[in-house]
Image 1 (cartoon, rainbow, N blue to C red):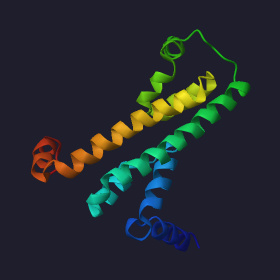
Image 2: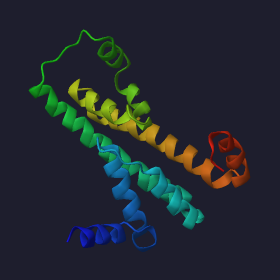
Image 3: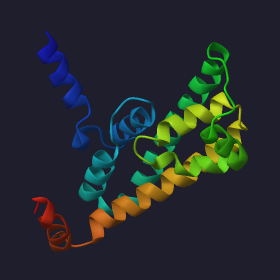
Length: 165
């Protein structure tokens, strides 16, 4: 039962079959607080369809930004459930920087919680979403371009000291 469910799930997410919809869903889910990375799906699609580089970057950016917006709203709701402690240095920094801090929403481990904290602090929603989109777009362009256009030999040399390549 579970095995067939997992096989059907894997088949549904297969890039050649579902392409951009897979990239969108994976990018959306990876922007929530769930531990999932969207970069392999974005790179895989771009590698299979290099002529659609900008399209896959746009789809991933939209999906990841919408996932960040969900985090924002989760944080906004959490504010009602948790007593607010504004005395921490982190929160003061975040409030001082405001929505611009969400440029860093692309960072692993801290990016998704940043979106939730923005909602918790009730930062302006659309300005926050715009900064999320700018940061996520920048990450997808740089990461995908580097993987596509920097020769494999260079990556092998860089990763060799770590036992890869």
